Length: 201
Image (cartoon, rainbow, N blue to C red; front, side, top):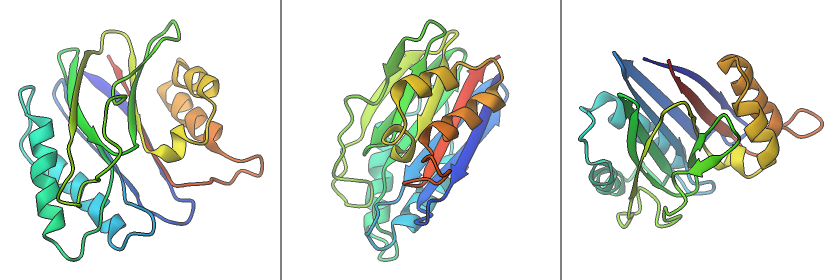
């Protein structure tokens, strides 16, 4: 079984989206960030999350192929723009997924080690361009926590603060701490934030 805490906050653009589905011991997480300044970015992010969580998935799903097909679907829809995407499927202590863009997925270990699962992803072209090239990732979850989020978190928060927050004993407190790490001194945000923090139980 997995426990997940999610947070979605808008800094004004309202283009970040997140979806989670948990069935039995399996969990599916999708995060998408509509391209700022590109018409239809929000709609693209919404479509990515909806189509993935509503579709069929299992431990053998070819996630790069799923995202590649979705890229073509979005590019053919004149109402949709472009978006980043990270999808992660977790089952029996293992996770597999794929990504496009600058949203990220981290494994945060109790000893402070971090594995950036999306470090080899291609930042562009984005989903919806018709030319996206999703990159796969996989890992053993073990006792680590999985953090999946848009760049509004990773770009504006200090790494040390993110790691400290993510390892808090309480998953709810940890998620709140992650958001706090991205806030300005006045409490505002410089960009939208969507995050999911998962712990295997």
